[in-house]
Length: 90
Image (cartoon, rainbow, N blue to C red; front, side, top):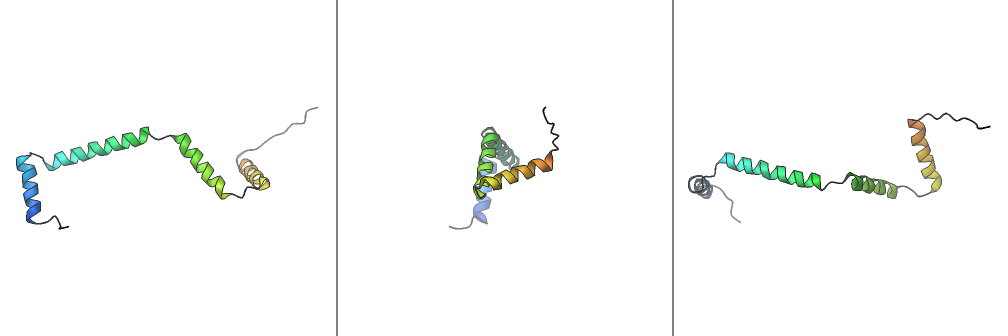
């Protein structure tokens, strides 16, 4: 495939500008509009619950599934974040 340089580029640019009336600003505006539309589509298709579930499953798959390991990990996370006060019922 031949590089798109030199005379061919100038002919194409002149055709776009003179015959079609397309300017650099037009191309930039179309590009920005297209990017905005694609971002909007991506955001509307985004489901945080699906992402969180996927991440949790991925990380759990890396753990050794021994109940004592999971219990100790949960205990450690809770102990680091919370203080519990227990009262004895009579």
